[in-house]
Length: 232
Image (cartoon, rainbow, N blue to C red; front, side):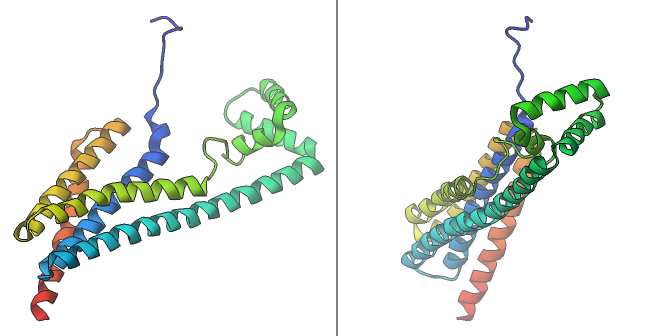
């Protein structure tokens, strides 16, 4: 193969967004379906089931968005503080910072002369970016983006919860619990398969893992709904 046609694909780069996407969609399926099944098992009418399911979808999406925004904002604040410290150190003691950058390359196996030359070139080009990347592990690709994270989490939660609400709306009253369980577990299995394929991993274990925990959550919630409905 010629060097001009060689292409490399590294799936590990997808880890961050893939984890967030799978988490959001999985939470949407499991939490909404479990609530719907619990309310249905209590003997509530379809109207109450749909209200509960819709409330779960909206509340869950907003909760995911708010939680992701707060946590990623905390990360962004920490990154900003670290960058401010690094900017101050570069302004007050540039010689030390240059030695520090060269030392980072030496620690990775680069010979001292080359490490010094690279550090000098990167410092001349953009000293703060070089230290952010090499010392703080902050780059344009990894920097925290709270609004993007919040929107993505809410969207993935909604994408996961919407089918479970659709099952409750379309199935007959007698089939809501069984149909909800089958449909939601099928969605979870599909989610596990997509996540595995996207990440380049064998699909069997992720599919089994996600369906097992989803089934456990639905069974527990449905059982509680049945018990409470009988008691009331």
